[in-house]
Image 1 (spheres, rainbow, N blue to C red):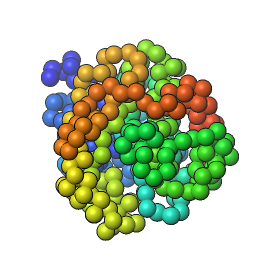
Image 2: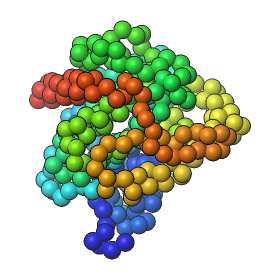
Image 3: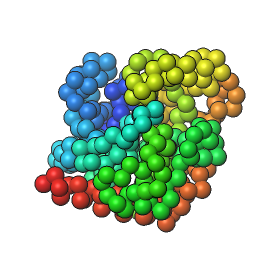
Amino acid sequence: MTTAERRRILITGASSGIGLEAARILVARGDELTLLCRNRERADQTRAVLSDSVQICIGDLADLASVAKVIEHLRQNQEPFDALVLNAGLQYAGHGSPRWSAQGIELTFAVNHLAHQLLAEGLKEQTRAIVITASEVHNPATGGGRVGQPAGLGMLKGLRQGPGAPMLDGESPFNADKAYKDSKLCNLLMALQIHRQRPEVPVVAWSPGLVIPRTSGGFFRNSRQANPLGQALFGFVARDLMRLSESVEQAGALLVQLIDEQLHQPGFSYWSNGLLGPGRHRFSPTQPSKEATDSSKSTTLWGLSSDLITASAAKSN
């Protein structure tokens, strides 16, 4: 890769899992990476694994004020990003009560959606393309979306209530697994809304499939805390026995593939790493769920989310 071909890429969630694997590939190719890390310890660990050449911004996605400071810092640079990769994800299925962000917002929604909308909007003048890591569980008709309570935002009564609402629909009792599915549905609706606002910008949402790392950290770390034996059994059956999962390494390679191939194509697309059978996947453009293609709901979600971000900023000041 020549200097002229070197791309500037900002990634959230690159200190472990899919994001870290994608970052390994991109660094090896010579791309210029800016990584958003929660704290200095995570930043140092990530740089040690990757390279001293990566740029680190310290920002906690669970604190909108912290995210706003990152945006302010990146705006001062004014150099454009060839890709903004909104990859970080949090779930704590198995826990019986909600957790809260610094602004008193249910943590899954705050981290997976609100912080990423704030980044996308705050850096829109510097962003040439966007990739959003969603999940097939946003769709109640497919795969993991059929297991447990389905995704569904209803009339967004919970979001209309502001901070303190445990569920976005404002009606369901708290369920951490559904909260995660709902946040991934929000990711699809966010992608659709960004496309409607800026049709010239390539916007790609994608589902990596079921990725179950063997390490104690990563995506399932919070769920393991709640149910270590159950999660170990789930991992063994789904990953090793039935071979339903995708490897972290392959999922990271798929994310890089999207950056390589799709970010020159204006418009919105959704890609899913669909399971064909034990050990077999197909990565291809896929139709999101019906609710994820509701343009009226995407507009409403964006507006209510923006109002919540603004109100949170006012309280922080």
